[in-house]
Amino acid sequence: MHSAPKDNNQTPPLGRRAFLGAIGGVAAAGAATLMIPPTVSAVARSAGTELPEGMRAPKSAAMVSFSDIDGTPVYYWRSNPGNQDPVTWQCTQEFLDTLVVWIRELRSIAQEAGYGNVQYLVSAGFYVNKEGQHGAGTAMDLDVVQWDSGQVSSPLDGDHTSSDDAVARRYLGVEATLRRQFCYVLDGWYPNHHDHFHADFASMPPLLSTSGESATNFVQATCNRFQGSGLDIDGIWGPNTQREYERMLGTLGVTGDPTADIEVYRDLLHKIAVHGFANTPF
Image (cartoon, rainbow, N blue to C red):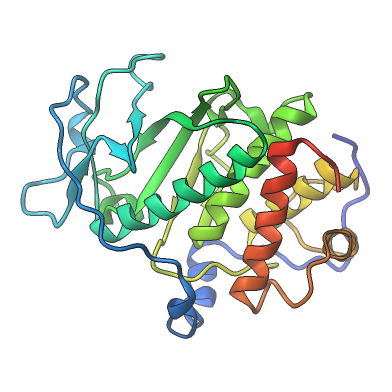
């Protein structure tokens, strides 16, 4: 990555709690535009790998159990790398429904680039017994995406820092598909997330937040990898980031305001994903 002077007149990033308060005000108005599929019936399979106790919800919790997302198996490698025994995960039905929307979009965009089907996913957790969205069963930590064609995107291996543009652009393509469906996504530039994506708040509409550290990291990294912007990936939205962001919108032909219109933001993200899987610059 090239370095550039840090933005002046910077807008400090919002922390997680402040971000959620800011985005919450648009949730009701935008909820009708979410692409929610018919309810997916989750069937528990006999698990060959038992998760740690803290990742198993109490029987009283309103969770569904699953071993795959729309037919794609989801493995657990944190205790046994490469293991492909079935795992029984848990989350809410609403969250699982949105995961199905996400993986169908991921498949569609990647298949257009010749990737074939998604062979399997690897996760570091869905329900986890702790405060926040994991404890509510409405979060996913994503470690690996493997395609039949042999391509792989591996946050677990730090693909966001790869010197290979194809690998890094594929990583950003996967991230763009997550951001199309999930309001809050944390990537490898966010503290303590160097080896996985975190996605949550399936029921809230996604919008671009220029005051959010994670969203700003994503825009800065995307501008760097696809148009050679040379921005510092520091999570701070200043004039340099604004300039390169506007350049990206113009090049991609995105009209409207991704910070105010959900469908405009999704259009931007779709175009980033297409370029990411095709490994083509803007």
